[in-house]
Image 1 (tube, rainbow, N blue to C red):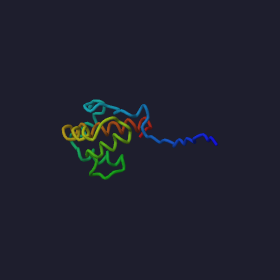
Image 2 (image 1 turned 45 degrees about the vertical axis):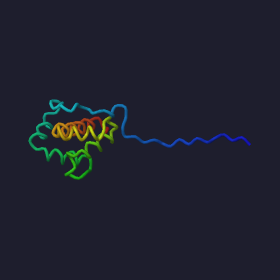
Image 3 (image 1 turned 90 degrees about the vertical axis):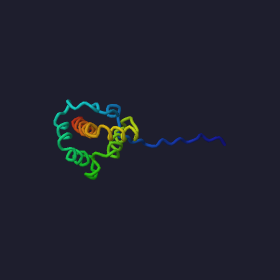
Image 4 (image 1 turned 60 degrees about the vertical axis):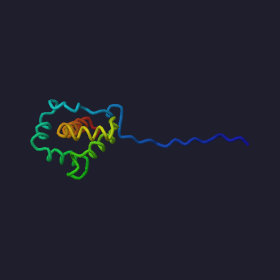
Amino acid sequence: MNTQPVVFVQPQFSVATAQSNAWQTDLMDCCSDCGVCLCGVFCFYCLGCQVASDMNECCLCGSSVAMRTLYRTRYGIPGSICSDFCTTLWCGICSLCQIKRDINIRKEKGIF
C-alpha cells in the first residue's frame, strides 16, 4: 500500500516585517530628533527609563547591552551581541538615543 507523506506547515509569527527590519535612523543621526538627543546628553538615565518603560522592562535596564539586543532581535534588525556591546560601550548616549528615536518612529508608523 503506497501512501503519500503528509506535510504539516506550522503557522509562522514574526514581529519583523520588510519595512521594520532595519534601524529607522543611523547611530549618529541626532539632528533627526533634537529633543531625544538633548535628553540623552543632559538626562541619560531619564532617557534610559523612558526606553525601558516603552519596552515594559525594568527602569535600570534601559541603557544596557541587553536592552539593545532585545530591541534589535524583536524587530529583526541585523547585528550581533558583540556589535551591541561595542556600540553601547563606546557610543552609549548615541546608542540609547537611536533606540528611543526608533521607538518614536515605529509608534508613529504603528509598528511598535
